[in-house]
Length: 424
Ligand SMILES: Cc1ncc(COP(=O)(O)O)c(C=O)c1O
Image 1 (cartoon, rainbow, N blue to C red):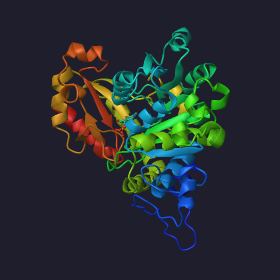
Image 2: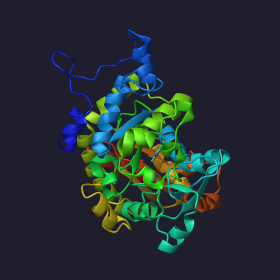
Image 3: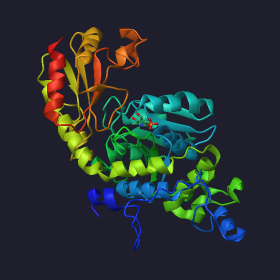
Image 4: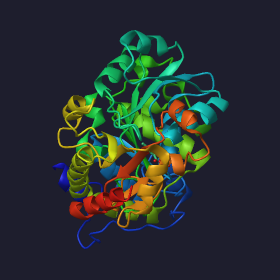
C-alpha cells in the first residue's frame, strides 16, 4: 500500500460483518474462561489482552498503523509526546548511563533530559547538530546508550542530518532515536535513513485537529541488541521482574524494544493513551497525507509572502531557496517539510505584540501543527519574564514569531497577516 492508503487501511482490517471503523474497546479488563488462559498472557506466551494499562485492542490498531507508516516492526501509543520520549530513552538507559542529544530540540524534551532525567542519574551531552565530526566524536562516552535528534527541530526549524548521526551512533554501537513529530511519516521516514527508533507527539499533525494529547514510539526492528549485549542488559539479560524473560532472545530484533517498553515501563509507569483518544487519533491519521500536503503548500506561500514584506526582518522556513537547510530538506523531505514558519518583525518585541493584536483568523495559541493557523510570540507570552538580552542568550530572538500554518484557504491566512502587519 502507498502512504495515503496506509493512513486509511493499515492496522485494522474488519472481518466479515465487522465495523469498518476501528471499534472503541473502552474496557479496563478482559475476561477469560480459565486461569491458565490468563496465565499464558502474563507469561507473554500468548498474544491477547488482560489489562488496558499494558495493552488495549483500540490503541494497538492505531499503533500498528503508525508502525506501518514509519516502516517499523512494532509500536506503542503513549499518553503524550513527552511520555514517548521519556519511555524511549529510559528503555535504553538507566542511572549511570549517558545519552548524546541534539542541542536544538523541543524545549520540553530538553528540560526532560537536562533536568528530570539527569535527576534520575541519566547524563546527557548536548551537541550542536552542525558540530564538526571531531566534536561529535568527543561527545560519546563508554556508557553512551543512545543518540537523539528531531527531523525538523521545534522551534528552530533545523533539518537534522539523520544519516550522519545514524552512522556516528552505529559506530559506537548505539541506536539513533528520531523525534519525527514535525515531518510526519508522510514527508520523512527516518528509519529508511538509518534511524532505529522513531517517536512522535501525536498531539501535532497525526491528530491534527487540536483534539487529543498523545504520543507514539515506533521500533525500526533493525538494531541488533545481542551484538551489543553488555551495553543493553535490560534487553539482553533475563528480566527478573517479568518471569526471567530475555526480551532480545524471545522477541528478536523486531519485537524486543516495544515488548520491554510495554511489559516494564507501561506496567510500572502507566502512561497509556486511552482507547477513546486513540480513536480520535485514528480519525486524524486517516486524512494525514492530504492535510500534510496542504499544510506544506500553504506554508510555502505564506513564507514567500512574508519574505517580500517590508515589515518583516527575516523568515526561517526550510522550503525557501535561500534557507540554510534548503538542500538538506530536499534530500530528506523532497515533497515538503512542515507547516511551521518563524519570522522576525521589524521593531522587535513591541511591534510584534502590536501585530498580534490585529490578527482575526490566525489564533494566538501555544500549539503548532493542527488544522487551524496559530501563532505565538514567545517574548510576550511563554518567555515574557526574560529581558531581550536573556532571550537572545537562550536562542529566542525578541522579534521572533512562530506561525503554524493551517489548512484554511491560504488567501485568507495571507490577507489576515497582511492586514495585521499594516497596523505596525
Ligand atoms: C517535537 C516535539 N516532541 C515532543 C513534544 C511533546 O509532546 P506532547 O506535548 O504531546 O507531550 C512536542 C510538543 O510540542 C514537540 O513539538
